[in-house]
Image (cartoon, rainbow, N blue to C red; front, side, top):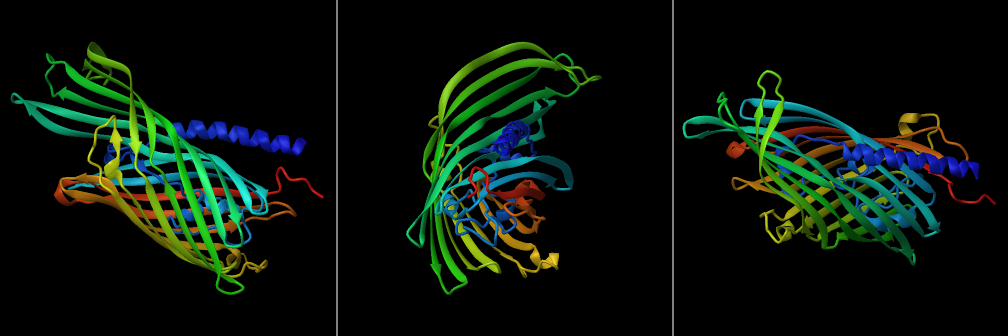
Length: 428
């Protein structure tokens, strides 16, 4: 009883810390100002290291892993699984000969899965859904007077979910995730006069508080090729859903102290408070296939698509593009029984990923490309508990330099700590 209370206390503290850390995450990506921001995807480092491969991944090796992208995979979880992770991002923005660098680190996820029966498990947790953050300036002229237009945004959405997966017969598995998306998106546009002290600057600030439920469904079919080799076909979908919004908009004038860079508000021109609205999210679909030799290797591919042209905010169509993407990847374990050779015990993951995003600027579609690698590092275990550190590295780019656009080069490192234990289960 004391041991169980200790675990529950640890989990409670971690959850509270995760809520705080996710709320404070920031990025600097001009492309995040469209739609709901840059969508992060529900991938743990185990999947990220394989190029975001997930739809047809249920289990591999002697560890239970939580694959959030397809809740049907929960049916293969045999031990209580706890996974917490952090991530860092180094980003370089380039436009013409100008460059800008940024660094960001944050707590990425906290997820738990608990077996209910031999063929089912429940899972719950918290992780990011989208990132929203940018700052840039463009010059302009009003009546021969030079001005600067300043654009900035911050915020993002998080995802809290509760899921259940179960097996039906020998080969079929089904699952569902009920999720609550929540967060806020804040943006502002300022007009500042250059070296004209007699004119007031102006700014329009907009804040959208967002919250609502979404439902994801998944299935997997596992077919035995021989005693050790399994072919898996997986499919998951996010159904159409509606999110509630609470919008506040204000426009005001201000002056800036050039010496201290402090701002002083002069007058409010207009203000609209607590205007309620609705966001309509489109359905999305992912189909995947994988081939696995148990405790040796796994290779697979995913194809995904979503009709973001059906996205609406308060009935308005912001002209987002339909999206699609492809992931190809796998994992190799040289020898899972090589207790005297640690390098042969490790998981070696690899993958490539391509996504056409919902952003289109100057008749140019913005895509995301990356190469991914990862490692699974088993730690010393005891009779009932198993531990592993999962690391993934991602090198990629978003956007292009064509048509006077910005290219983002990013380098992401994700670190996860996985525990498999017999929590909440009585010993016989």
